[in-house]
Image (cartoon, rainbow, N blue to C red; front, side, top):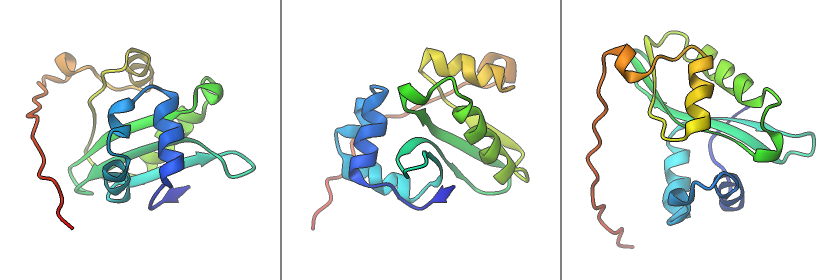
Length: 137
């Protein structure tokens, strides 16, 4: 299901479960980032968040998948594949889906889903870290 935001508790539980602690340093900032992304979630029968995929796009030429996470106890049940397929269907008019992935198990997941590694895609990834301004309220 598409959603516009997650609660702080859901963010902590999901990102913490897979050890992506960099997102938990400033959970409020992560929540704002998620709120400005396209967010597709998977929930169990009781409404518990068990997985999500989020990305950003210009809706025409490119979409970037930022995160695809499934709680460890729900992995290897097809949830990630379903999320990725629904995400792909939603962006079917977009020419390119790009993923930057530093998580080894996810690398294999994306390869099995038909993504090419950068050397096969004739691309190089550059990242420029930035020191963000502290918000003043």
